[in-house]
Image (cartoon, rainbow, N blue to C red; front, top):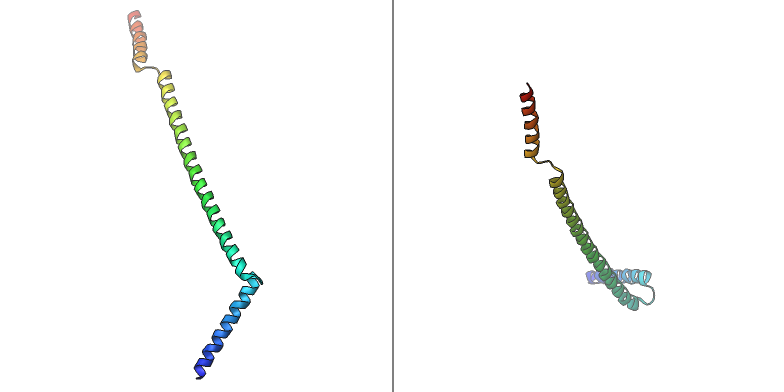
Amino acid sequence: MSRDYDSQLLESVAVRRRRMRDALLFGAQRARRTADERFGKMFAGIAIAAVLCAGCVGWSFLQATLAKQKAEEEKQQQQQGQLYDPTPSASATGAGEKGDKGAEKQ
């Protein structure tokens, strides 16, 4: 019999503490505020998810744009390198002609 009383007393104290905590957190209109807070939290979660998705899309777009620019720069550098590099056959014939003329004079 005393155990029932003890458990009832402990349960009563727990309920009182919960009610006091709810009154402190939510005030007199705790039923209305909990629904409002749930909608607020849901809206905040959706907003955070939308911002994260937009950030991922933006990062992907930035990476694709930078990769495209890098590929175009490399292509231009290769084209410019082919235009300005002297051909090995022209430099060899120029050196050979000078060597031949020097040999003829002697």
